[in-house]
Length: 272
Image (tube, rainbow, N blue to C red):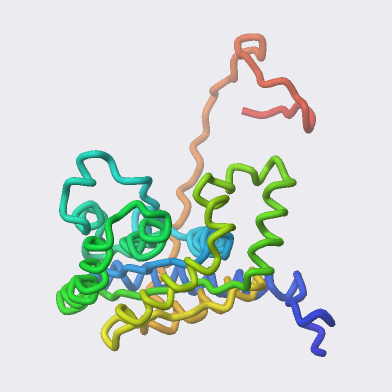
């Protein structure tokens, strides 16, 4: 086994940190290219609960400018939104020229959570499956680059991650009531995912499945694939020269003039 991987087959931490840093550097180049070329990019992240979508999105965004790349993670629809055309609330979040939008879950909620949990009628569900290819075709033909990722994990891996969240107070917020219900509905979600793919895995807008049992592998593979989907050039601007610092006779007021945060860590410093 290469020194880059452990005996278990999982990536070594040092190698992972090197690779994720390289990929994040390339994402910075990509964001400048998207802005310069006026591209409109949508990346959809879907998958089972605890599949690692949020962690991957966080690594994508870590070095990027939120003015060029933004995350959309919508809450449940309001009363008004429930009475609107289903896709209407998502249209408000589509990218303008020079933007990339990452959807942390998307309009595919209807094909997953809403259908399995009984939040929509069968007529609405069937209508969605038939109409979403047309909706996405409209986006693509208007020039939007649409990339869809499905994070696939095993039932055993999901259970391990649920148990970890349940035992760790720092992770409890990740266990929503919907997550807890989904734990008991593995089969229902599996059937819903298969039906969704049958209708929406099209030539114009295919699904790309990320094998996500190992989070670090999933992050690297997904980001690497995303970079391969949009040919780009390095347009990173040269840094502007730093101006000379002015000379000043400014004197900081006595420290008693401030309300300092108590030093639970570190020590007092001196300076202007």
